[in-house]
Every structure is written in structure tokens, then in C-alpha cells.
Image (cartoon, rainbow, N blue to C red; front, side, top):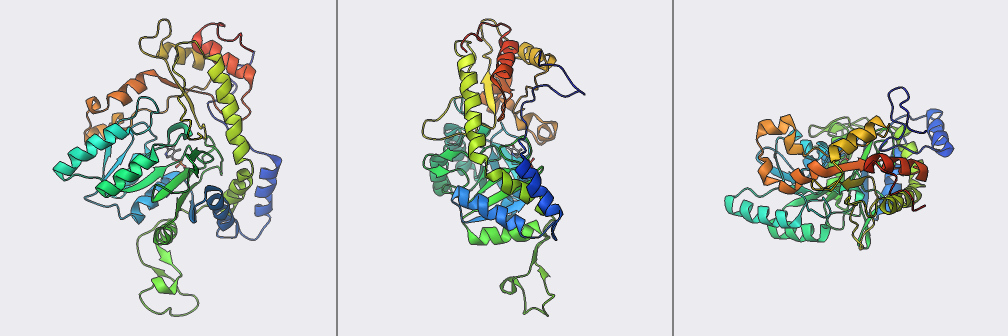
Length: 400
Ligand SMILES: *Cc1c(COP(=O)(O)O)cnc(C)c1O
């Protein structure tokens, strides 16, 4: 038996970090060094991620939420502006616009990929153009680590004049056609999260990447109180070597050296994390074939980072029911989850006023989806147990 609760924790969680002895040593080395913050590790980590992704600049911060906030600010999102994102995402993808005083709206998802639907985006843009309510920024979210159709979104951005922030919180290590996610080939800024359930971790942490020098300068300034030490950004010649200027309202969104050292060390295993996630996905695909459960569709042109393995139990499934399966898994000690409750259904967003009838695909998704446990190190025997609890029978376990 492997599925007992221990101290209220699931025996098989939906996601879990992977920490090696090298990671621990990297953190200890920083603790023994001169700098716990604002030292050499943050720029080292930024350089490592930027070169991995094939992007010019990176700004490490204390969360992806902070990265989304300063990304919006650097694109001058403010009062009177509109930002669009996907409803099937974590609330932070939408909240970042509201922090800036802007309005948020949502574009329904694609029934195959569960990412922002290009058809819905085109229709919504045509309508918004007529009513003078075009978005300033669109934030596509690479759900589960699979890239959105960035070529199409980029083409629309040129046609309708909006900027693009990719919320790639799920997607470091993945690729889109022949580019790494994070390369910003089809966007202004890309954001990663390093929360422990994500692909690599720094405990808490995030990063904003861009190829645009003025955007990176602005984001670096906003990360640290809006303060600059560059004379060329100041209103007059520095008073002396001590001098700095606060030239706009920023925040303390800095990442610590401890976090950066952990992230730097994790980067060396990023590719193996992603390939292990693909192994886990392949085993689920086999265990669940012929189950009538809808498995995650994969774009053959791209490589998902496989942050999540989302299955859908169709509402008209012959024998299975999503809610019953969910209960069965949780009672059996499996930490299944639902990514995500459509953001417009949250009371905070309901108070702003959204009509669920505008998002029929998101509504259907919310009725059918379950995220199964997915992380490197998840073993076949555990996956069999998950599938057993999910399907209520051993019928799909005979393949191995
Ligand atoms: C995790 C996540 C975030 C927020 O990341 P934090 O680092 O926890 O702030 C934002 N967007 C998406 C899609 C996420 O999954």
C-alpha cells in the first residue's frame, strides 16, 4: 500500500520539487559567502537562463507574479488600458494588469490545446476594433508547458497594435517550433515561475526575459524601488560616488543570492527534468489508452515542458464521472488538482462582471478536467495506483 495520508499530506502529490546534494551545496556555499542578496549569483542565474533560452536579457525577481507586474509596467500598462489573457490560468496572469490600474478581459480557450483560442482572439479583436476597446497587452499562457500558437498571436499583434507578455510559468525547458520558450521571438517579454511545483525551483522566484534593452532597464529599475545608479538615466550629473536617484515608483521584488544559487544549480538538470516528465506522460498515455478519458494533445512541432498532465473525463462518459473520480483519488491519498478554476468565476472578478456564457469552452473544461500527479521521479507503480483510482478498475493496468 502506498497511498496513506501522513501528517495530512498526500502520499502522491500532484507536483513536487527535485533537490540534489549539489543544489544543497550551492545554497550552503552562498550562506558562507559575503552576499546573501545583491551579489554575483543573481546575474549568473540570469545569464544562465538567458543563454539557455536564446534571449538577450533577463531580470530575476522574487516571484512570477512580480515579474508579470513589472512586465506590465514596463509596457506602460495603466489606467484606461485593457489587458487580455486566458481564463484557464492562475489568477496572477490577470491580477498583474489590475495592479497597474488597467482593466482585464478574457479570451476563451481552444478545445484541443486549452490555450488561448486563436479563433476567439480574432473574433474578439475584430469586435474590439469596432468599439474602440482594443487591448494594449495580450498575455497568452502556455498551459501545462505547451506553447500557445505564438506565430498567430504575433501576427495579430502587428495587425492590431498590441504588445505580448508570454506567461510561461509552466514552460521553461519547452520549445515552440525551432525556438526555446523564453526566446521572445514572438513576444515582447516572457515570464517564468520558480515556485516548487514548477519545472525548476528557487523556493519562490520568477524571471522576466526580453530582447529589448529599454524594457530590461525599466524592469531592473522597477525591481528595486525605481532607483537607478546609471548617470545617463538621471536628471542631472551625480552629486558624488554615493549618488542614486529614484526616478519612478518601484518595489522590492529582488531575488536573494540563496534563491539564485539554487536556481543556477537546478538549471543543469532542466533538460533531464523535462525528459523525465515526458516519460511520465508516456506511461499515463499507455495506461489510459482506451479508457474514454481525453488525454493531453501534443503539438508535433513543439515540445511541452509538461508541468501538468491534464486529463478530461467527458461529461457524457459511459461509466466515469469527474467529481466522483476526483473524490476517489483524494480519498485514496492522491493529490489531484484542477488547473484552473476559470479566473472570471472568482468572486473578485465576478464583482467586476463577467458572463460565463462568453466562455463556453472554458466552462466545459472546468466540468471535465483533472490534473494527475506529474513530476520527475514519479514511479510506474504510483502511476498505476493513480489510474486505478481514476478509472475505478484494474482494467487499464495490464499493459506493463
Ligand atoms: C505559478 C503561476 C504564476 C505565479 O507564479 P509565482 O511564482 O507563484 O508568483 C503565474 N501564472 C501561472 C500560469 C502560474 O502557473
